[in-house]
Length: 210
Image: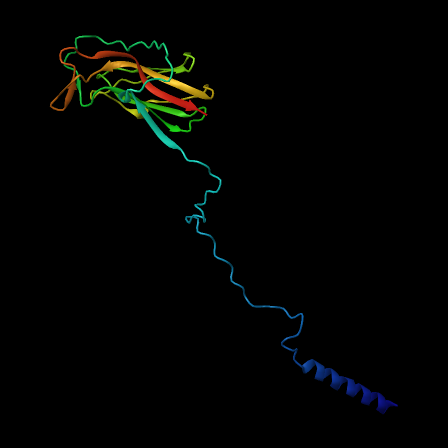
């Protein structure tokens, strides 16, 4: 009996060793894939997406500049009443490199609170008074520029105002200023012996708030 048990134990041990020594088949189902997969590269932040990278942006903005030089007529008559900046007469030798004008710039479409920028060329050391009216002739906003420089220029950097408080609609802009530019002599504009001329209630242009 003891010899039989010893023989059976030896047989089981031999079978176990044989099974442990056999390799797994290469195509065994359920085997793990241990290969390394490359990750996709990170997108370049400076590279635009296909289609311009601006889907749904809609239309763009358009810079607009209008001035008294264009001599346009207002769409409706406004009884503008804009005072002149006080100026002592007796300045017949005032001259400028450009003929006088007043201009306004903005970006269209203009939203409530958007910016208006004024600039121009007027008699030296004078200011421009600017009045803004609605289409019914109501005065809704005023702006007075800084003094023009010795070269007659009113720099736009100092003449930015906003449209806060104005509702959607079209507005008309008028200005009163001192004009130089009747005669041109050797590159200089002047008024002869008349000195600066009073230009009052001069139509600059219009803008629309959407």
